[in-house]
Every structure is written in C-alpha cells, then in structure tokens.
Length: 427
Image (cartoon, rainbow, N blue to C red; front, side):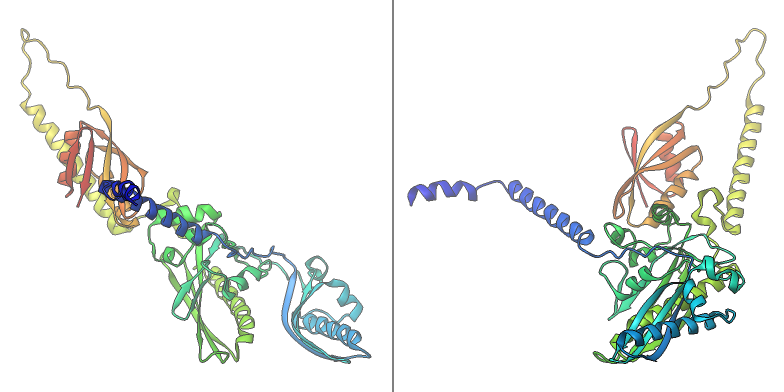
C-alpha cells in the first residue's frame, strides 16, 4: 500500500498546464465528433433523373374484371384514357394510347378479387405523344439554374437537410423535366447539411452566396417553405406554403392546403410542389425570376445613391490633389544658372502589408474590405484568411510605408495597432 501511495502522489502534483492541455484535447475530440455527426449518417435523398416525358398524376379509377389481374389491367387502361383526355389529345383507340405510355405510377391502390380502385399517374413518351398534342411536353422558355432549398417548419423547428423529411423527399422525387424552371436539387448527403441550411437563408453577403451557388453550379436561389400544423396526432394537417426567391429572401406568393390525416400528407406535399412550379413559372414569365445581378462579380451594380457618393468623393480627392499640385508649383523657386538642379521626387513605392481584423459576421468581412479599399493610397486589398467569429487576415497593397498606411486607416475611423510590418485594426 505504501508503494502504491508513493507512486500515485506525483500524478496529483502535475502542473495545471497538463490538465488544461488534456481539457483542450477533450474539447477538440468532442468538436470533431460533433462535426462528423453533422455530416455522417443516412440523411441524403438523391433526386430522380429529370425526364421530358409528359406526366399526368392524380387519375382516379374504379374498374372490375374477371379476376384481380384483369381488373387491374382494365383500371390501367381507364387511367390512360382519362390522362389522354386531360391532356386534350385527339380521339384514339386504347391500343394507340397504350403504345405511347412509357410508365404507370401507382399513387395508391386497392385490389379485390374482381375490383380495382386506385389513384394512378400516367407517363407518356414525349417523342410519340408530343406531335399529337401540338408539341406539348416541353417548356418554351427555360430559367437559369436555380438552387432549390426546401425548408420544412414542423413543430416549430426549421430543417432542410439535417434529417430526412417528407418535404425533402417530395422535391427529390419530383419529375421536373417538363418545367420551365431549372431546379438544382442537392441530395442532402455529406456536407450539404452544413453548406445549405436554414441559417444560410439569413445571410445577405454576396460573397457567401456566390461560394454556395458556385459549389452547385447555380445562378440564383429559390426557397419553397412548407409550414405544417398538426391539429392532433393522426388528425388533420394544415400546410402553409410560401415561395421565396433570391439571396434577400424575397416573398413571391403563399397558399394553403390541407390533409385529412397523416396518410394524406405525402399527396398534399406533391400537390404543393405542382403549385410551386406554377408560381415560379409565372414569376419567370413576368421577369421576376431573373438572377440577382449582385451575385455576379462581372455585373456588380451599386445603388445610385452610393455610386453618387463615391463619385463625389473621387471628385473631391481630385480637386484636393489639383490644388496641392498648384500650390506646390507656386512655392517651388526657379533654379538659377549657378544653383544645381534638384532631382525630381521619386514615385511612392507600392508595398504589401498584412492587416488583421475582427470578423464577428460575414457582413463584417465585406464592410472591412470596402473600407480598406476606399482608403487613399490603397492599390488593392484581398482576404487571405477568413474566420467568422474570430480574426481574419487581408493583404493590402499600399503606395507608401506601413506608418503611412496606419495613419490613413486611422483617418477612416479604425483603431490601428502596429507590429513591425503588420497591422491589426478594429472599430
């Protein structure tokens, strides 16, 4: 026992720094585990391949036959006739209509010994059926690629891809081939739940949005929001659906649907998507669905008032520079024949400096960059490291030394700390 106590005591006397290091290691492991938990798991639903075939859903049939198989066959033929009539096609025989059908989608069905009751969808081959329908089956116009972020509000919780849900599944299974909208639908697997989430919708930074859209090859974003309210478990469900668009989350239109029970919710969501497609298509035809020009750096536009202020500032700086040059010309004495001529002043050398700045939010990054770039003498500024909620770093090209840059930044309202050739600025 004495030997054990003697060997145990030094462990209790270890420096506090060891304990702190172990605590930091534990936090790092916990953070890594949490991050893995956020992106791992079976959370993704891959969207179906879009087809330009002509699809008609929600066809209700009630057929009978000699046996269950014959009743089902008659029900499918009945659905094909009803779908063809719904498309407004010319009168054809059942065999001719059946030859143009590429698939039957079973939404629900009840099969009896001699009875078949079902709700079906019928998919017609566009190549065969299109000419008979006057070229129907494809959009006359097409939108730019639009990143689609389906937001579900259920039980007071907003989710996108954090967990699998019916709204995500409905969009993944939606056949958008005939739509005029080019829906870009992430699967929700891997890092999608980190990059595309409900928090992203609250960001207004164009730099953040450009990074997200470039990752998915999209030009803009649309946000179909579904808010489901359940009256009681297993009872009626009320759905409020809102169509939004763009990085500023602009409202387009809202509508409501209802389901009598939980079993009817998937059908309600599918119906909602059809309505969303109509809303976004109408917005496209009105010209309200054009990609936001501020999302493209080559077509970046400013508010006219801001542009006027910038122009006025430039004019004022030009006037000050001209006045200073005139004053300097009057003050310079004319050299005599005996006095040696002075060499002209050397042009200011452009130097690169490292500037650190606090960035509590994405907006702080844009604001700091705009302020530094607008500082007189600054030839360019670009971030080399971004840490939201921490300290970011930018490289600044300046026509002068580091002391002059520090003075210029102070004149812009920054608090500047200098350490060698690097600066730290804050408001």
